[in-house]
Image (tube, rainbow, N blue to C red; front, side, top):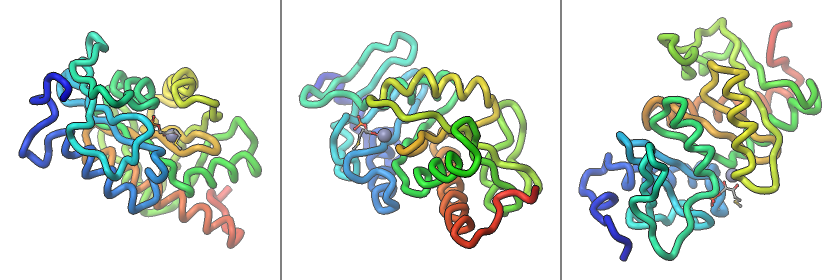
Length: 229
Ligand SMILES: CSCCC(=O)C(=O)COP(=O)(O)O
Ligand SMILES: [Zn+2]
């Protein structure tokens, strides 16, 4: 058994190690974390809760969780049979930007949107859409109170995939700097990272974006434009 078991064992369903397992079970049913891909990480105070790498994310138990000290970046708990998620440096980039939770999905809608943007607008374009009610599920940006309105344009930057997940970190951080209002970054042919101030907000934003991406793919099929001009 790993040391510091008390950091991950709790009867509270809202404890981060319980929440990560519960959320990943839900996300599996949405096709977001199938085949071990994708995941979720939560920051609680100075503790970062991280899932293991390469495991079936819908079958994880709280005792499988790693715990890292955010300030020292040292592991306070390392389950011996596992390695931490390869997404860890990307989750840390979101926490450094102030997030309390970061969700990584391999949603097929997100992947399709990255391909449609490349085909129709080029490799340097970001995903842009407007005039959809669900846009109201996305915050305006860091330090800006409230969410986007019906008449606002939603923009999500896209970065290119790399052979290894951890090598995405530099381009994710660059996209966060170029688009300081964004709470999500799409990864071409791979999926998306979505973060929020807390678990509830990250989940709401991830669900809203996935709904919008599915709609955007269906709109393309019907030759309906994403933007009015
Ligand atoms: C088939 S999953 C490939 C790795 C990946 O993209 C991912 O999101 C999962 O990484 P982890 O290290 O958390 O298993
Ligand atoms: Zn991935």
